[in-house]
Image (cartoon, rainbow, N blue to C red; front, side):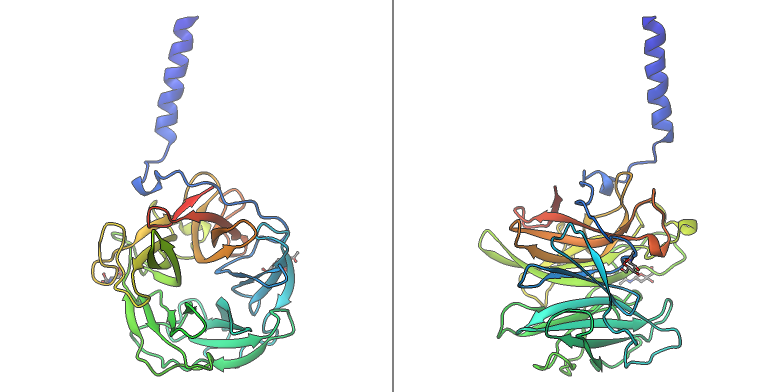
Length: 348
Ligand SMILES: *[C@@H]1O[C@H](CO)[C@@H](O)[C@H](O)[C@H]1NC(C)=O
Ligand SMILES: *[C@@H]1O[C@H](CO)[C@@H](O)[C@H](O)[C@H]1NC(C)=O
């Protein structure tokens, strides 16, 4: 009896070892599952989330001419409201173009939404801007292209506006999938490019061996936070194999993921937690990757202070393997971050 019990447990342990995939050391961190999300949490890519003064949360996302949803809390319930630009953008880059990766900020009381106009595989994308006084569907005015010149050095996607205070210098980053993340600035109208030549800030963070798709560094999002009296600038970004379909999943460790580099100035130089340069040595510290049974390829992230709980939230899109890997299956997720160590750590 005892013997057979022992051999049964030994056998199960052996079986469990045999069917468990090898552990990627970067997955060893025990990240919590995303916080709950109710209402419409699906068909989400590259979300941009902000809270209006009246307490209503707004979520903007890729496709559907930029889908807008609202909720009373980050956890929902989220209600789809409609498209930000129902008849598309003034910009024309390609037939069947799509609007991607909105980045929405409140700048001096007006909401500015920067968005990409692109198509899968296109390296000559453009970035436009629309404004609104309320964030509501139906209130958006398109101003067309911001006017950053196209260049073989970068791809004009994934804009991010950053300004630390009302009269501070603004910084505006974008790019790129193929050629890394670049930073420039906007004129004081926040609608047009300043003319400052875009400077490269981050190279590929992970360069998977032997892969036959481009290595990706994109979706930058700059956020500052004080830690023990030091003001740090965190450049969050997405890296790895973007946008996999279920038939072509990336090798473990190469999946899309959220990374960060840090600097003591908004223009860098950015380094990772190991001190590697993010510009010259492909540095980058993993913040959140594929983990557990429910979270595959998180990315397209942003960071927002959630006043209702007094915590910083990292929000993103991800796939749940139980729901599917299809483009339309991607979900909205978020977790809270702790910065006590000087680096953002996902906590429950
Ligand atoms: C959920 O939101 C997506 C856009 O994010 C939209 O395409 C879809 O129609 C919405 N579903 C419902 C039931 O409202
Ligand atoms: C970025 O990745 C691509 C594709 O893997 C590679 O050709 C290129 O050399 C990398 N860039 C840097 C700076 O390492």
